[in-house]
Amino acid sequence: MAPIEGRNESSIFEGWEKWQIALAVGAPVCLGLAGLWYYNRVKNSKPSGDDSSKTKPPAKEKVKTSDSSKLTSGSQKENENKDTPLGKAIEFKNSGNKNFKQGKYDEAIKCYTQALEVCPAEHTTEISTFYANRAAAYEKLKNPKLVLENCTEAIKLNGKYTKALSRRANAAEQLGDLQLSLEDVTAVCILEGFQNQSTLQMADRVLKNLGKTKAKEALKNKKTGMPSKHFLKSYFASFTKDPVQEIFKKNKEEKQSNLPEQSDEEVKILNVPDLGGAGDQPGVSVVNGESDSSDSSFRKACEKLEAGEYEEIIPLCRQEISVSPPTHHCQLALLLRGTMFCLTAQSDQAFMDLDQLLNAENLDKKIKVNALIKRGSLFITKEQQTDGLADFAHAVRIDPNNSDIYHHRGHQNIQLDRLEDAIKDFECSISLNPDFPNSYIQKSYAEHRRAAAEQSTGKLEKAIKSYEETLKRFPQNADGHALYAQALCDLGRFDDADNEFETAIKLEPDNANTLVHRALLKLQWKQNIEEPVALIKQAIDLDDKCEYAYEILGTIEVQRGDMVNAVKLFEKAIELCRTETEMSHLFSLLHAAKAQLKAAQTLGIPLPANFSPI
Image (cartoon, rainbow, N blue to C red):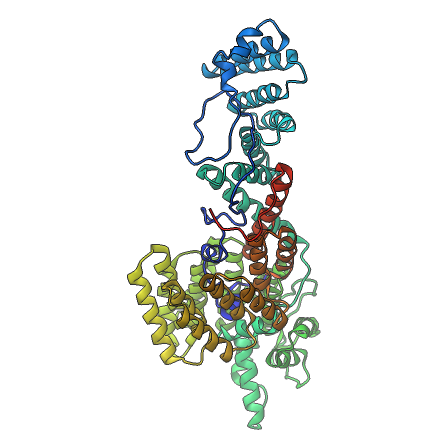
């Protein structure tokens, strides 16, 4: 699984925060709820409500609920039919309610069961209420299985029964059936007109948990795939102390100067005993003093790396590692292969290579630090934060003057919303490597994120100045212009932001993500979908592996009411994404769209087209 920093270096991080993206496409922004959308109106419905406990509906709730409380307050129908089967059932129900209020839940269940036994089948509204009341009692007894069963019976008789749907959603969540829970809570959101914050919070929670669960399942069987060349190029450019690239560049320089191909520094780095194998390769050990050959597999892998022909790197590294007796390039081949496993979402293989490398004795500190950075990043993308930060701390102890450690840890701290720590890390990276533009840009971005989180106009202005100072120093950096554009957009300076995006595209025309971000600007600025959609499709034509383009296009299709196409686009984005975090978010979008589609069909509510938010 690829460390996420590659995406951010090459694709302008993740761009606007998700709430800003939602705002741009007209989605309701409620506690991070992904993919659930406001309807202009909800068809009139009369779902009955259980009356085991009287809960006042939200003040803004639009949906009518049945007034079954009349049955407990002595309605004319109840008084006139005490001796009928229905009247007897209502009497049992009333007794159940009394027991419920007194906390006698077992007695309440017996009463509701008696009501169900005597009630005529044609009185579906009352039967539905009895089941729902019995579910409420089972809920008090903490028996989610029976809550779910009773709510299901109630919903069969009344598909718009809000309380039964909500109660079943809670029970399903407790039982681990997140899909059913999401479908039910989505239906409740719709029936409540998206006005009940507790329901929205539950939907948000279930979506996130379902997304994480689905992502973990999908990663087990995920097909390996090579990211876009722009992504890979930018990822490798984010390291200034990469021993693989350093050795290759040094050898190239020496070769051009007609010097011996193997330098003393290379021998020092590579002359390490007993590395051992990784993955499906046999164990290997390094033979001291082995001479280099111009046609070695590792050298060819480095040539492919420089040429941007990434598909052949892993096979070439595998050949180098499997040579017997092992070559002195074995460690670097293992590091490069582990890196490529990271970038192609093969996290298990990546961990095996990096672990094997880090367990080697007398490992040169440049190799060790680089491996720790990559393993630490991989841990964090797997949501193993403690292990990941421990690797970075270990790297600092080994080589506190290596700017790459602080740069990449700063990026990970951004992902973890540790913005103050991120800013400090980038400052350290800058002090150690003042000519590296990426750290300046990410520092400005972290300051921008902090300003947005704190809703501080003053800090946003400070971030703007930080971007401007960075671009004065590095005017040819495309990422800097693109991130500066996003900050300008936050201030409503849309013309200036668009000009910055245009500059970024001219400087880096192969970066499809910049087109997507410009499309988002157009959405927020012009409130017109056609031009942004055209830009996103242009991005896909430029790079059909641009996962971000499919994600945003899918989000737009949700806004337009085309859930079927939205699902297809989210599935395509999932196929392309490389990290568990990204995949979790995309699965949340996917299942939110599916849940809304199913809920609309079940409730008989047409999906909106080109609607405006409430």
